[in-house]
Structures are given as structure tokens and as C-alpha cells.
Image 1 (cartoon, helix red, strand yellow):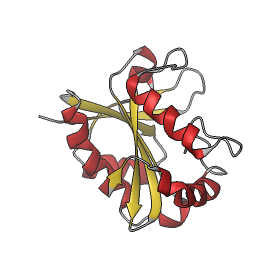
Image 2 (image 1 turned 180 degrees about the horizontal axis):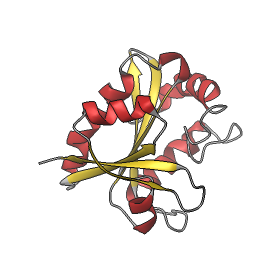
Image 3 (image 1 turned 60 degrees about the vertical axis):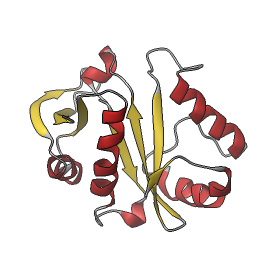
Image 4 (image 1 turned 180 degrees about the vertical axis):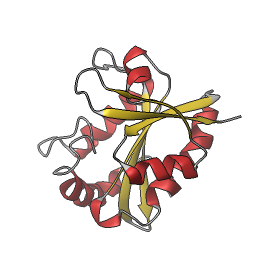
Length: 168
């Protein structure tokens, strides 16, 4: 299941956050251990509405993957692309909690997100990943992603793949 967080998800969120932030500090952008969970939920709501965003950010909806009561991943759907996101980042980014990787969860979350992107008015979605991230490349391709190009990220030199998924 892919859905937004609610207040009763606090324990599942904290478990997933602790398990994931060491390997992926962007798992819960804007969250810190000293922030009340209710305040974090308000921040996610502001992100969706486009309120109080950092410079060069766009409105986005953060969805969370659940299996039963366990939070197993996070998916961010950016409502539009700006110049930075056209270069790297794209419309959709996802992270799976380490203990749940290699189980098809990222593929499932991405498949569930594509109709949500279409509901937001997108006719195609850009998804990027590092060229050496074979697992993510497979996820994107399984969901209909067509490789547009590979190119270095100017700031880091890391080669990234740019995929487009048609939503029509």
C-alpha cells in the first residue's frame, strides 16, 4: 500500500527512519529526531501545498510504502520539474528500507505512484538514477521507463541515467 503518513504511524516511521538514514539521509527530508512527529506531518502537508519551500524546490507529495503496519519505503512525487530537477532528480524518487530491499517493493511503489502522477496532470514522468544502480534501473524499466540518455551530474561527475515513463 502506498499512502500518506498519519499520526498513528509514528512508531513505524521511527523504526524505518532509524534503519534507513545511515545509508540514505534523504529518506525523510526535513525530519530530525528532535522534531515532533506532528510537526513533520505538517511539513509534508506544506510541501504538498508548495508552502515554505527551500529555494529551487517544487511542491511534492510524499507517499510511504506499507506492508501491513510496517513502513517499508518512501516515494516522493514532485508535481512539476524545474531546471534542477530536469538535470537530476526528476519527478519521482524512492527509497526502500534496507531490510526490505530486493523484494520488489520499489517496483510496487513506483507502479502505484504512476496513476497518482497522472492525476496530478503529468503526461510523463522523469526518473533518474546513478548508472551503477542496477536495481533502480531494473525497477524503472519494469515500470515502462525508456532510457533517454546517460550523462554526468555537473556537480559530482557521477553518471546518471534519465528515464521517461509515459502516463498516457
